Amino acid sequence: MKQVAEALGGLEEDAIRRVLSWVSDHFSVKIKDLEGTRTATPESEFEDEEVEKRPRQATYEDVAELYAVAQPASDADKALVVAYWMQFHEGAPTIEAQGVNTRLKHRGHGIGNVTRAFENLKRAKPQLIVQLRKSGTSKQARKTFKVTTEGKKYVEQLLRSGSM
Image 1 (cartoon, rainbow, N blue to C red):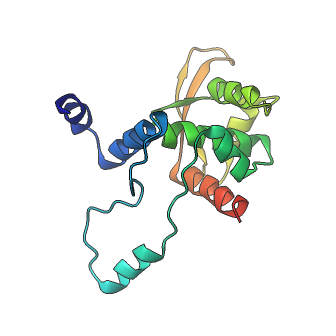
Image 2 (spheres, rainbow, N blue to C red):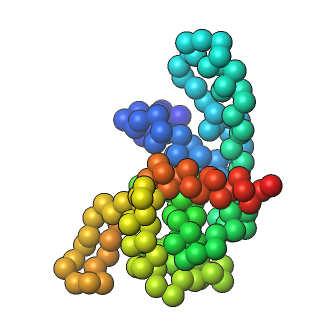
C-alpha cells in the first residue's frame, strides 16, 4: 500500500483517476463511482441537483466493446475511439498512430492511411487530437498524440448516441 501511495502521490487528481481506472479494467475489479468522485462541496443546492442529473459513465470490458457501442463511421472516428480508450481507460500518457491502427487491425477494422486520419483529427475545429512530439526528420517519423478535451467529449457523444 505504501508503494502505491508513493507512486500516486506526485500525480494530479485526473491522472490518479486514469491510473485507477486502468487498474480497475486490467484486474477486472470494479471501483465504485471512480468517474463521479467529487472533492469540492457544491456551493448551492442547485449545483448539487445538477450533479445528480448527470448520467453515470458506462464501463466497458475492453476496447472492442467500447468500439461496438460507439459505432465510428469514418477512419478518423475509428482512430479517435481507439485513442480515447488507450488514453482514458488504459492511462497511456501519449498515443502513437501506428499503435492505434494495429489495435484496429486486430479487430478487423484497420485504416488504410492512419496518418491521414490523425491529420484530419488535428485539423478539426475544435481539435480532437493534438500532436505532442515528432521523432525523426522524415515524413514517416513517429509522432505522439494526445486526445483533447473536445476529442473526449466527441467520443462520449458517440457512445451516448450508440447506446440508445
